[in-house]
Amino acid sequence: MVARKPRIVIIGAGMAGLTAANRLYTSAAGRDGLFELRVVEGGRRIGGRINSSEFGGDRIEIGATWIHGIDGSPVHRIAGEIGSLHSDRPWEWMDGFVEEEGRAVVEGGSQICPDIVDSVSTLFDSLMDYARGELDESPVFTGDTDTAAGGGRGLDFHRIAADAASAAASNLSVGSFLREGLNGYWDLAKDEDESRKSVEEAIFAMMENCQRNDTSACDLRTLDFNAEREYRMFRGEEITIAKGYLTVIESLASVLPPGVVQLDRKVRKIQWQAEGQSQALVENGISDSRPVKLHFSDGSVMTADHVIITVSLGVLKAGIGSDSGLFDPPLPFSKTDAISRLGYGVVNKLFLQVSNESKFPFLRMAFHRPDSGQRMQGIPWWIRRTASLTPIHKDSSVLLAWFAGKEALEIESLSDEEIVEGISATISGFLPKPINGKCNGEVGSGCGVKFSKLLKSKWGNDPLFLGSYSYVAVGSSGDDMDAMAEPLPKVDGEGCCSSASSPLKMLQILFAGEATHRTHYSTTHGAYFSGIREANRLLQHYQWAKKGLDDYN
Image (cartoon, rainbow, N blue to C red; front, side, top):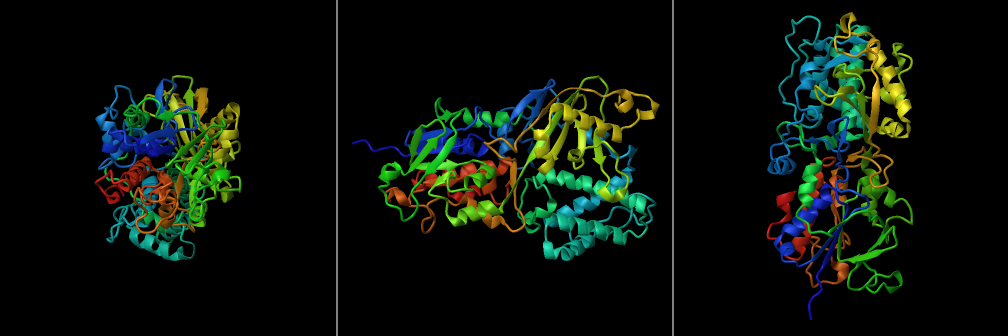
């Protein structure tokens, strides 16, 4: 009698799911056909939160954009191996345009002195380095104490950061820490006048808005301070991928035989056998031979021995929200508690194509605070926490702005006309006049900037994602991400058991995805490593893998 092959089903064809599939299929067991492998994807494309596309003649990234550090990065390695790191076409952010030509303008149209921008930026970066445990113990200065107006103040940013952490200890969020740091900066810089403080406040808020985009936290006061010290990036520069992030996904999927990846198969219900349940759950339609049963929206079903779930944290949050949720029986409290506590936010991109041939500058926007009395009429609330509006590269007619939190959700609901009207009003508030009284190839309101079309991402309301990426919220910790990664049902010891064990003691449900990685959460690196981790967990379970899981943590 021929032994039945174990069936492994992976839910989701994003970075985590396809990495797991690639690892399983290219293992010795996969090559020898010792198990059945399926990847079921609810959408009509692979990639998940990676979605490279074309707009206005340029290649764009609607989702994941950056490789966060290249030294040791597996994503960078794969992109290099497939020739995706360079292109004969310019690509987003990688032509030095930002550093060479970026300008910061305060609401009303005044360009900010670079020394002031540098001083506040150094303060902000020093605070974030301190939060991450990266700030050197020796004093950090902006310049010589004798330097006149501008950035040179001879301030000890390590002292400012340490004092800020102490002052914010009662509510140790990143947001409260940053604000205490700004107050400490002003206390030491005794030459401050209210006009300069107003500008510095606007610059600091601009830096906070960038951090909101990086973390997906709508409000930095919800972002846990202590978790920053666990977060890891690879060393080396941060880059975008010349030929598109999707090429990495396509490379991972290319080894899989036809039919392994099944698109447009949205899972409605996952039935599994929790500890203490009878193995013969005939009344629930679960076969004794395969302990997990997947129900799809089209009415079809699929049984499995093991299911690797790679859906987003947002989908998991929605899936535990009611008795009719995604899991039957419901997930144990240890799992749902972690899912509930962790943060998960929305980040959206807005692309606009300039219809004339004028050159739009790299514009960093510093907005005044609400009580300043200097706010301009006509600029909508949903753009006031946007940090920049910039061409995606030096010669591009495509502009890009990032939105996070409630502002990101708002642009999903606005019409194209409402967005263009709001962006145009904002441009008029920051570039009210042509440069030097002439257009000189640069657009201001006097140059009549117009847009021919726009494209926006809609991650918040997409039922397959319900947001963008995770963060460690105040009240949660890295322990919650470890709890997210624990397979079900729980077993004693190492969490693995022999293939001769009862089906109730097998690894029925495994979890992967960026929100399950303690140190690389929110990134494609976290998704990649989690996929490797769960694939190797199964291979080790059947003693197909010789390497331990520690090699991939």
